[in-house]
Length: 188
Image (cartoon, rainbow, N blue to C red):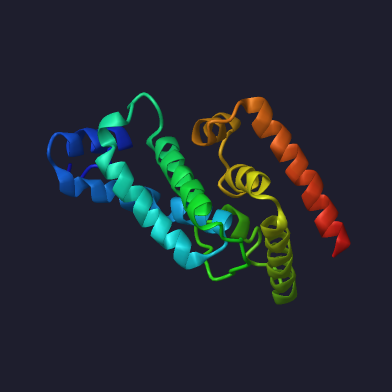
């Protein structure tokens, strides 16, 4: 596999064939997105890091159940999502506002025009912070679909696969979440 840019499915096949070290390719390829999704869902950078590590450990040991006809990233997000739900159920933590994450790969943190004047960049950062605070105020079911759809830019089909929800439920939760977000943002 040296010198190549193998597909996720090829990497999984190599790991299953005994080349365990190549699993690092999958970690490198998907770690930031998984971390950012978990960080947005749980609101805590340290917890998101622990959950991300846990998701990769579980994925490694469950590789035999991965079906290569489906995207690896969706399968991995599903593992991470269920790990997050289990953590919530076991510890019943509240989501707080932690703005300590790295924004490099987070679509919600991207600045559209890096040549914008400094005051515009400050306003954009303040707007992102305000929106994120509103997102953390949403109920967990709504926050999760908002993070997966708008911050991770996943399709409805991918969200359904990850959460196990029917498409109608995903769409209705998104609509309700957007409505609640609009109300929260108007109140500011």
